[in-house]
Image (cartoon, rainbow over all chains, first blue to last red; front, side):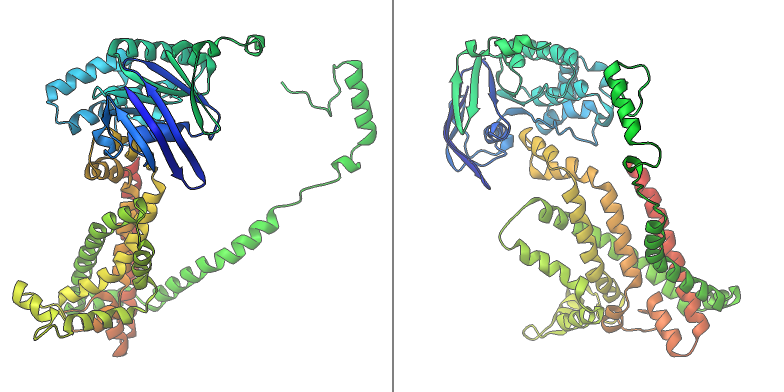
Length: 227
Length: 303
């Protein structure tokens, strides 16, 4: 369960005031909004990378507003992926587990499981610098899921991918969420993505974050006209 | 395939008319193609002419040194026990001061690059002081620091009593004098290095549950390899060239605190120009060897 209560964030000239949001357990929520509206800022506030100047952040009922990012148990897939340039794919999947002092056997088991689910078994010993866009996305997703987080935050994870890869990853995200029952917040620009995935739908516009009915996502005449 | 408005072949009547029209307006040498960007030769002549003058100066200086000296002078200079000892001390002291510089500059560069805090501008300014000060002043300041009365003792005496280490006018003073300047350059290099590394990966690592120390050691440091090698080179080269602070703080005692830069000065002051030049060339060779080896190593480490 993710809850934002009257969150205020200021950074330079940019500010978001009194933003509220509530995503129930086991729900796939999609957040849309124009560029520069602060969608990424909201994700960063939830995972603790952006200090909030007012309001509360709650995860599963715990007030985590002042917690360190590492204590929050939030899996985060940033827009730029931010993979670790000097690490192998396996290193990415192992990283959070080594931090948690898992045993070697448990780590190996978890990595094999993740690699199987994400379809990246053949990439495990590769370095991340020469992966394709879709492969990098899977690695970033695997890294975020590795330590069984309480919630998953994804910032435009399917951006800049070709359509086939995007559909495949969309499918993957849905099945992962079904399997894990993970509360997920997915930021996107794409209505199609939102329509495919959303169980709850939020729009951030002019500093206002509002839940909208899923019917808003139904195909619109202009969209159908597209080739 | 794109259509070129200038080529009328195989197109509809309308485009053909356009093309004819175009042709009519722009026979060869007509106004449309009259403009020519012109030659780039003057650009390169001027740029290379100005920039190259510096390269010529360096080559000319080295060539003059080489012309002045002969293998005999080299052999003569290198056979002197004082100079052998100076070579030894130079290699050891430069390496120690370069390693110390990296040891200090890496954490300081990281802190200054990643965190903003009150008074950071002051630290920035302080670090630049050894860079802009006359080297002599640094030597003098070190001398004063070690001999300023602290109650009934001073830093020099404390070092001697606690560690049995004589600093002033001894080998440790050489290293400390070199370190004081070399470290400032190393910090600048490391700071720029970390500035150029994207912080996003480190932020994500924080969300994965690790402490800052682990983020630094496992994410930031491996990416900073090239910068560390560069800072090490710069610190080593600065240490090699250090003279003023060593002269003041460590003295120029033969067989004791004499490094190669001191040797050049000492030989020159007794009129042994040939030996001074031979030692100078030796320093050039040492510097080039270190720069070359470290650069080679640096690129290999990263690739």
